Amino acid sequence: MKNKQDVSRRDFMKMAILAIGNVIGLSLTIPGVAYILGPVLKGKQVEGWIQLGSTTKVEIDSPTLFKVNLQRQTGWVADEEQLAVYVLTENGQDFIAMSNVCTHLGCHVRWVTEQNKFFCPCHDGVFDKYGNVVSGTPPRALDRYEVKTQNAQLYILEV
Ligand code: FES
Image (cartoon, rainbow, N blue to C red):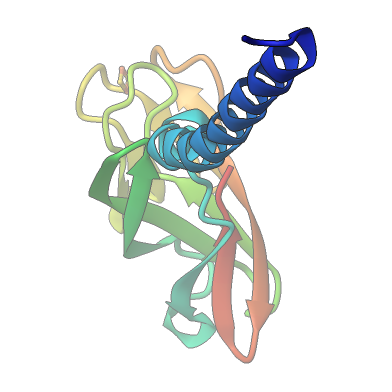
């Protein structure tokens, strides 16, 4: 013969075991889900300051091309990308860093020393040494990077 208190004690034990099971289950599931979804939710990781190279490589008054390989992580996908940056200085101390990507449709501009201009091969866009549009279809100047020097090394801040 069951008395009412035995049944409720048994029910209590069932509920306690279920609750403990749920806590254990969640404690295992939440970190697993966070581990799986974490990189996807983070999106594209920003690199921060990127080292270009020595300041002594930059020719006075002539944009100098630097190329760096970047490792990018977007979600679960890791890929390598090459970044090309033109650096200009007029005094060897202050530097301007410009993207080599044309602001029209994204072709790569090229510096031609003899003409003292950047040329875009796609639609004849022309930029001066500061990256300002001289002629053609580009809607604005070449994008610039924030730049700093440290121990005679150039760094740009990627955004
Ligand atoms: Fe450079 Fe069109 S992409 S002018």
